[in-house]
Image (cartoon, helix red, strand yellow):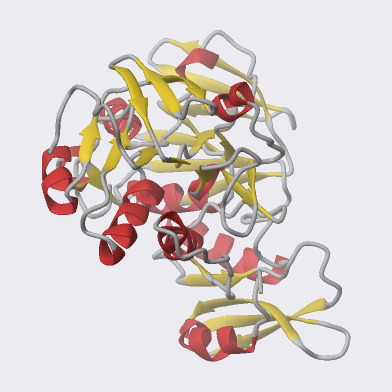
Length: 389
């Protein structure tokens, strides 16, 4: 059912062909094989695993090899209409239509699965425009092209994506420098002792750290880039990758009169303040939470699918540990809720490390498991409170 002109009427219209959009469609199809679904995407509409972007180099996979199913295959498999390379310019909530570069599309229920953009810091220097971010498959193809035949990559950001790319690049034979304003890697997720353990293992793999500082300027000098740091040091590299975090895509929602804060604000049924318009995935904010990880997307899709076909279901989030894809040291973390009172205790175990965040009365509120300690994942997860009950 892949087609290039919009349907005149479609019950469910989803904007965005990332993991959130396609997971939601799969969940709907488990419940209803007949409801018409149209997927509108500015991308080519194929399905690929975005989490693999930060681990594909070491597994010697080119960008094209990460595509598991092309758009026409997804359209056939899930019995939907795919409008690929299709930009949405506006939403008319009163008429229940969206305007696109391929014409007007009507909806009964509209879902915004818009995703998020990589944050780009304003950097000085004549090579600031050469900074690369990787947020989708096309970005990844450009990045792979940029590093082909090169040796040195500098990464701004020691968070989840920065650490995963750093590990992947050193495994691929590159020299890697990682820069972050925070004093440690994974500053928002790990306690200090666990962060130091990860940094140590990544250092042994070849990563060089530049922490508690930031980039002042990036300048092109012949074949290389000179990165000037705030601490007075300079780094020479061939390619500069920025991985400082994500910001939900809010422009379309704002222009439509949909309430936004960090993300597109939705209730527990994932509905916005405008009736019949929903949001899911990296762009959505539920109870102040924006969780740009795979497990929350799965949970949200399983709740939203029945709601869209008339079986109203409230979203709940159980404890959902995050796996950090760093082969140098297997790491699983379930950070405590923001503002949680308690303290971290860290225990070395043979071949790893276990860190527990416990409340003042001894209840487990979060953990970080490394190496051999990751075997404790399911046991400890059962002890954790739900993120959203």
